[in-house]
Amino acid sequence: MTSNNTNFLLGLTTGIALCSAAFTVYAATVINNVVKDNNNFQTITATAAISSTAINDSTPSPETLERLSSMFAINSDKLNQIVRHFVSEMKKGLNSDKSGLLMIPSHVVNLPNGKEHGSFLALDLGGTNFRVCEVLLDGHSGARVRQSKHTVTDEQKALPGDQLFDFFAQCVTNFLIEGLASPITNPLAEIAKRHWRLGFTFSFATNQVAIAEGYLILWNKGFSNSGVIGANVVQLLEAALKRAGLASITVTALVNDTTGTLVSHAYVQPSTRVGVILGTGTNCAYVEKIENITKYKNVDPNVKEMLVNTEWGAFDDEQVIVPRNKYDVNVDRSMNGMGKYTFEKLISGMYLGEIVRFVLVDLVKTGEIFSAGASPELKMPHSFETAFMSRIERDHTLDLSDTRTVLENMLKISRTTLADRRLVKSLCELVGKRSARLSAAGIAAVVTKMNKLDGCTVGIDGSLFELYPHYSNRMRDALREILGLSAEYIVLEQARDGSGQGAALIAALAEK
Ligand code: BGC
Image (cartoon, rainbow, N blue to C red; front, side, top):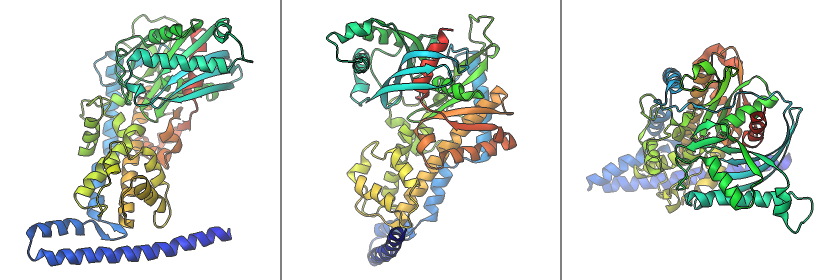
């Protein structure tokens, strides 16, 4: 306790000393410019820009803050308009494929009752990692999971498709060999003695025509492997497993991470009707009455409901309702899939840091931040990670010292003032808050469409919801603004491992 107090006081006095030193430097700069002003109009303009940088070294310019806020803030009226448009796009998407919302029937027609049991393999390709899991469902709403996790590098995201799937098969081989009780001379023969059922979580827009058949519509989240778009990804996986000598594995379910999340959360919380991912990418699945999915033919008369994968990342790609600013446009243009998944590009972890970076580079140009200029690191695409935003938003020190570490040590900006750091923090708040409010608008639309305003649980997985400070509170605030009192009946809950356990459960349900 005593040592904490000492540290706190030390921080405080150091902060005051640093602030006053920085202020002296700032004042000197302005005086210099004023002297030059007498002779040179261009310098006057520059001075005007610099003097609007900050009121002093610790307070960012209110004009700058206001301008940024007007670019990123989304008020309640706008949220309500978005919700109305979202609901009408959902209806269109359920009718035909002529809506930005793909509304893909998942072919999952049951939710678990907790009694599912057995051992399943699950593969999970999300945005950043590939996982191999063995999931043991115990029949009492419980599961045990053994897993291996592998980063998918940028190089692997650009390999020919077959090679990407060979990499997956290699990971599965290693995983199964590691799982053998003792070293064996011919491990593949040992593995082949058993028939394995596998759920494949493939978290990309896929036209799912059966529980274990789906054709990739488009890549996103940085993937561009050739030969996969338009192909049945289950077939690609099974072919790769066969090449690796793993023909005893059958892919019995193809799963989106949102349907996996919904199902795995329903295993522990039966009131769950919606599954959401807020991570590298974003998306939502929910339970829809089969009669409302009018584009879905071949209806089995016993089927009453089906999970629908909305692919909400592509909502409003026609750009008619969600406000977008020049930085959003820059991010969209700089990534592959320009004009596609534009809603996701405002919300998910893959893009938020890049939006902040574009704004910062612009603020440096206008002289509103970092008088020492932008570092080569800051100019590098994707150098400002969304994790930095989390860290900055969590920084409650008086002099924003952790923000300084991010900016000066990690992004190599040579000198920052407290005003700079406060401006960066406010910017992160604006971008992070907009993301939370837009995802809340999506959830409000989905529960409105489902007629579930009297109550349901939304299982949410992904690093933004789990780790980004204030994210869930901001979502709840927005839900209250949109739904009023009904928001209290919509429970947002952290879901865990929908992509592993959920895939196993869906594989188990597929056998029912
Ligand atoms: C994909 C979705 C996925 C979401 C979350 C999006 O980019 O298109 O299928 O559910 O990311 O992982």
